[in-house]
Length: 176
Length: 243
Image (cartoon, rainbow over all chains, first blue to last red):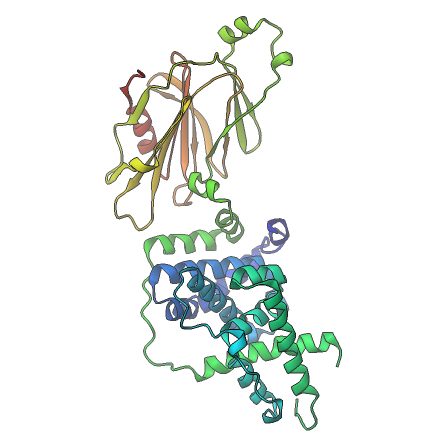
């Protein structure tokens, strides 16, 4: 794993870009981590872990549209914070179990903004599994370890997310 | 719709969902975040060299504790037939250790006689201000001792470690470093090596030396400059002889 990411971020241009990314986003990252964790030291750990992930996946920043890069970074720090929160065993009352979630009716979603809103409202661990898979490319096992759920549960979340998206996108009248 | 198209749209909708939340969040008074000194130092090290910082962060726990001047007590099974074509007793009298240098690590192979006596107890008698021994972390084995010193109430969780061991045949000692300046030193007249990491790198420096008379190799690791680490080394004193 390390050998792979050593290939990126070696050039002066990459390092300059990384420094710019830090300057542009570290304040928001710190706020997000602190909002979730409510503890300064934990927030620092989450932010450092997030930067570690950014370094590991640095080649992805060249594939993400510039105007979407802040949200990719937010996804990383949010999920690192949630993972730490789970570790600290403070999340009992925050996690919505997958089984308790009833997918909304695809009929109510008629355009892209409503679709984005629907995905913004997915339960945390459900959405985290999708983000880790589609935004960071984690394996099922990695996601399971990070979220503290079984690999089967990860697969179920991802396939249900895909099914929901496909159903909405393919239904008659939906405006992409 | 193909799977690839669905994947692409999934990425897009996930990013747009985050954007939506960001646009709708209460942009009022932000939560006050005051970074600690340790965090600021980490960020400085990260910006100086992201890859190296990441590499240090992902080290195994034992390496994190011992940091770059990692000390590993190795249970070597050294085949010494090819090393010296002399009898074991002659070899023990002549050669008690052999060092092999590599680009970023050195291995000390021990050839000394086996010691039946338990190691004497040594301690650092001069420590930088605020450091005290973390008694619960002391490890005393027959042929090696490890002592950790911590700074009380230090948010950076700084440590100083000292260890020493008999140079018995079959044992060994390995030291690895990053960008250390490596040079020979004398500690109370005994031959040693200093591995001085750049100041502010967040990596521990190390000094090791050999007491030939006692057949013991010592090492001290600390995130400290040359003066302090050498001062500590020279202050190491015998506090208890074995019973």
